[in-house]
Image (tube, rainbow, N blue to C red):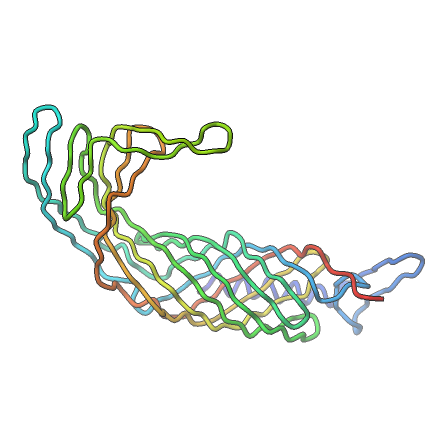
Length: 299
């Protein structure tokens, strides 16, 4: 958690600097001077607390159990398209040391819509663990905003949808028909591609290989506390700390063909598995954002 001590120092330093630096805000012929000992609200004069913040951020999540090693074995048959011969095979795949903590969370985009004492929030990003587990997440949440001098205190709750995937191996699918579980992967497949005019068109390609993925889908709830600056001109900095609770989780094996055409793919099927890990634990993050579209207060 050492990076967060540095981030906290940076935030406190910016707050201290904002409180100590004279700021002149001009509006027509009159000039308002904000000096030490006076209000440190840097929102431009004549604007209310209704505004929108677009931000990006970085966080760390420490789940109680990030997940255990996985080994998968299943039989499958291969039919050679050229000679019609059928052979039997066994797939062996494993994920060892993949699920680790902490999980690094990268908020690519977060949108906060501030309306007086209410903050409505949506965003998305991706996560990455040192062991290799990775994926993307979507989030949405609400905060009640409590002004405290230069700062905003926000008791909050967020809801996360996390979609992670790790490749366990691949099976040669060139000029071969693969049968596994109740699915068949043909030696060719159809997919949609760009027609050059912004639309889609169906195309057919030869299969190259059949990928085998482990997928984990989770829904998490996070009560948290956010400490945010008021807009410093356009700049907003915030720190947050909370506790993730896993509400639901499911895992599966996903079989997906990859074709010889660049970017072509075809989902063949999936097989459900049991839960892997318990994604409940502490989370902390820092965000840096830009304030847009302040709403002018009624005169």
